[in-house]
Length: 423
Image: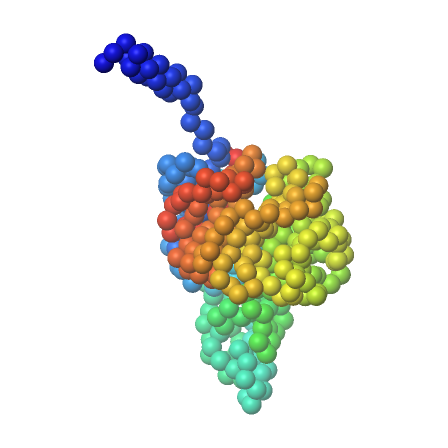
């Protein structure tokens, strides 16, 4: 090797060395991602894919009656989730719960307290007459004749056979007395429910409940799904199976059904996705979807306001179209949403900017679908469900992508409903 060649090699080696010392690989995004696996367990994982571990499960959580949705409290100190594991012993098909990041202090948010707390209350007895007033010649869910009956505070539900036109009186012993308030009574058939506000259980006494009448189809998926926190953690909101949105204090009253609609007057149609404002200045602002007009759009309203609010953008120029998910950006500058094409052949995440009023596509999926997603606390990254089917519970994995659309990578196989917390 001559001197000239030696000098060139030396320069290249020195340059590479300097670049090596100067390069700092980007730090992984901060926070912890919670997700659901198989509908039966809640898991936590770091954004770099490390430390994948179980947070919570329950022996009664099954794929058909399991965990539905997750949401970190904005300060990251508690995780709310919707679960149907106790559906046979609750007014709701699915209730909201909250748990700390270390797996401790599980508490029931809707229809509290949880069954494992009943032992601390005085007990009474309830006599209940159930009537099936469905006409025999009419076909509905009430025609089945086989129902599960439950009184809030009872140790166990009771199953009865009650054909149309008949009645039966049941006795529930050892029912927890939650104080001077109505404890609900509910009848169940699959995903359908009939209920009455109930009765005031009295410790040491037998109380006759108002009759529970079963007729018609009942209410399908009467419960609490998709928890969304207010920015200061003081409240949550959730949707029912018919996509009406209710609000709930973070520390709800014990032993009674709490009901406070998000909207005043008639609720918007198809408002299955919504989000509370992420900052103190936007704390009372809500973005939501409505798809029954000429187009399918996203609106903004003050909590407790009357629909329609302020129109922001359309996600489709055709009514009754699907929006998978919707979230504010953490700084309040815009929003992200995920939706499916008209032909149902792909689903992607989009970014809408409030200042420019422009929409751009973040993911570039073809013949695949981005469903539910969550945004990193710094607003730079997205974790999202990705599958081959537009049905969001079919073979879903979790992927990550930068908000500018770069850096797409697999986070974990067999995961769904991600929520990215500050912890």
